[in-house]
Image 1 (cartoon, rainbow, N blue to C red):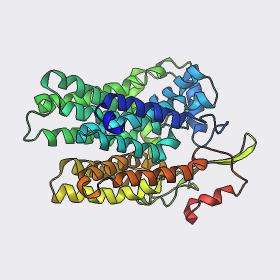
Image 2 (image 1 turned 135 degrees about the vertical axis):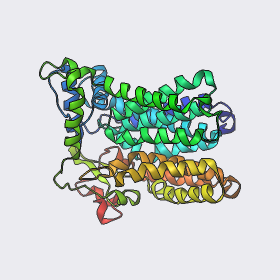
Image 3 (image 1 turned 60 degrees about the vertical axis):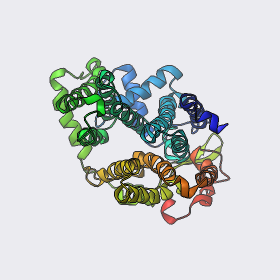
Image 4 (image 1 turned 180 degrees about the vertical axis):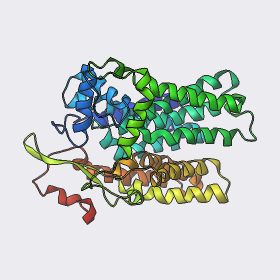
Length: 412
């Protein structure tokens, strides 16, 4: 059956999306109360619905607007708070499939990349909470899909596809400023990949490509501030739009008080300090939500990164080199982004990209590993099932029920 589905990539994408939506959506109402950073973003979404006044101004509006959209459709309740994040997580998994398919032009590794991303646990948890990161990942992954789509398009379609990529990247910045480096990365990759290959990107001239990327991404970003123009109190004006960005910068870079779950950027790939998003009685039982990656994918993915660097540098293999560079960039930017505190959820996008790196590594060495990617997938499924109770806020046996999953002191 899988062999037949591999010949129908569009149908396979649809099935992946349905499966991801069911996986992420079942039990979306747990916990029944606001938890972790929902206490910031859901109230901000309520304000956006009312268009009353500025709030949570350290972040742009798009992510909170999307949370508000879910609340308008499903109501001001746990499902409404998380519905659009759930959809964003689902589309992120489909995007991982599409990105890998365009990169390696083979359905099997694209399917495995999507499965690894769904089982990697980071997307699962972020798709079930009203935070911004699910939307950030959605727009960045699909911005990458549009980038690859443009690179292989003809001259008639290249400009429109490139504009779509720029708009998606601009939307990512409109969720969180952490996406800004990816716009620069896209510009640099465009210049590098066009170098010596005039047929790529439909032969788009370099100045025109950079102009489209810059103008469309910036226009998309600024357009997302439109709701703030209609606040009843302290409405934003066009004259205040640029000075407001300076105020946001100050808020984003201000020193913060130490936090129990803070961690250094270098520790995230090792999963030294995951985050308990929730751990308290709810709906008559002790429940918990731990943001922690699937150990097989998070740690195995690091070996795959090294293997892809080896294949790319020593073997001149294009796809492995591309994903190795992309993961290294996505992780490395946190060494220079001016944040006074770091948290494991900042590793969200590099964690997703590990799924692509793993799939590409298995595909590149397919003659040597044979079908061992299937056994690795079985391990991933087993670990996901093992952690599921503290990912999905299932009922635990008691206040000390978490101890079963605490492999290291830093996980508690």
